[in-house]
Amino acid sequence: MAQREEEEQQSRGFTVLDRRLFTPEGERRRPIEPTEPPKATPRQEAPRAEEATRRRPQEAEAMELPPANFINFVAMLANNALMFLGQIPDPVTQQRHRDLAQAKHTIDTLLMLRDKTRGNLTAQEEQVLQEVLAQLQMAYVSIRRQVG
Image 1: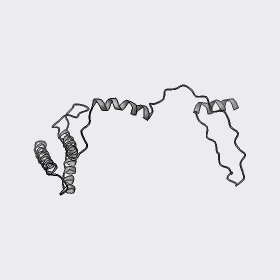
Image 2 (image 1 turned 135 degrees about the vertical axis):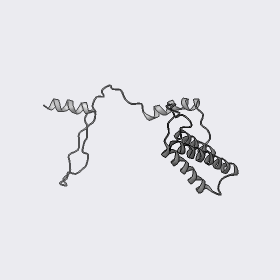
Image 3 (image 1 turned 90 degrees about the horizontal axis):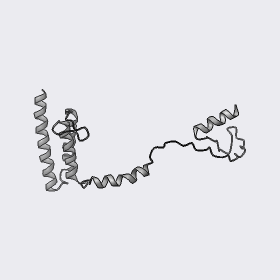
Image 4 (image 1 turned 90 degrees about the vertical axis):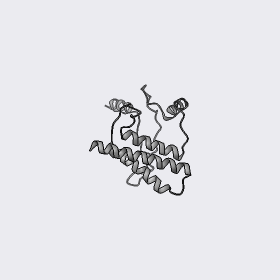
């Protein structure tokens, strides 16, 4: 029976040892004698985060990202709104679909950005934001009328 328990313990891959110095009754514990660590069993492990990071530079080189700035952020939100309006295909599935609630939410997010950044934008940023909002709002109203 002891051999079976030992085999089960080794198959689990780890052992939990209570290394506290005192028992719940307050008495000093006997020191734990070191034992051999369980033998590792060969198995397929998931790739570690550092290995995945090593692969990513090649992917990043293949796809250069635009700089992180306000105009690109507005463009990203506008693209999402257009995708939700069914104006452009989903980049993953290449399918067009409409989700008017998400489109409205994205447009509302752009409106909130306009209000919160008022007076802090360059003339170009302000112009891009106003034009994008006007186009998205017109497209939303037009599609909303078609749907009914």
